[in-house]
Image (cartoon, rainbow, N blue to C red; front, side, top):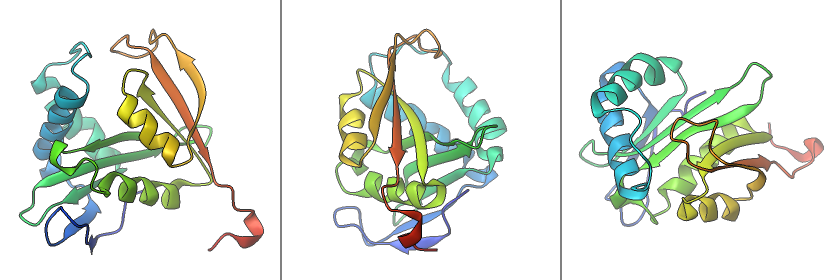
Length: 177
């Protein structure tokens, strides 16, 4: 479940952006983007894992999951990371959607989310933190609905979270194949 490799154009982010599956050699840059994004947009979260642990998890778990796609700028700059999965019951999940701070509000998040919807639909779930109001607005603008709120006792950060769900509204008889 990865985005197929191709170039796209988005104004404000350079000449072109390469969307492609992640490979093992991308792990350091992916880890750095996750760390930068969390430190920039989620400064209220307590740090559960050190930077070295995040690098190890990305290299040893996230990238090998085969569900990670990247958005790279003109000079190979890591602009976005999207990680998708299905659980044992077949439910589709967006596990990670992180953008470089310079890529926010330029359409890249919408592109990555659209790719996830096409790959995973018709029902997708994801979690975000209740305090992450920017992410909550973003997902709601794209048709995700809140289906549960929690006190955060089930996540590592112990920070209240939101479970979102998106359902494709198109009837099966008119869905493109």
